[in-house]
Amino acid sequence: MKPETEKLRKKYMDNPPEGMTSEDIRHMSEDDLLDMDYFLNEDELDDDFGEESFYIF
Image (cartoon, rainbow, N blue to C red; front, side, top):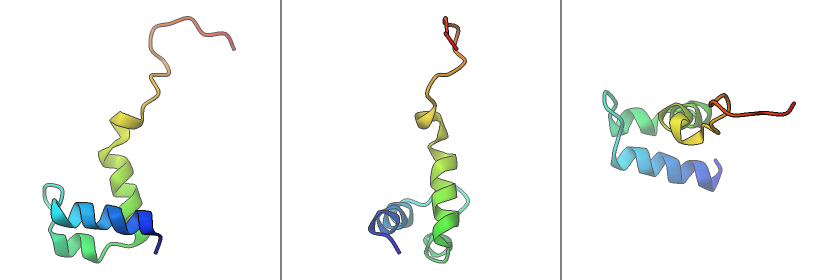
């Protein structure tokens, strides 16, 4: 497993999302862990595309 993924796993095991336990996080696949992280942080990743502005395409 990649070191970045292990850091995420530790982060979520120390402070699991609501409805999950550290044990749930421990047994998640790498893909599931990355999907969960993306879902929990998707607002931070938004690039504001579609805001009222002028765009040249």
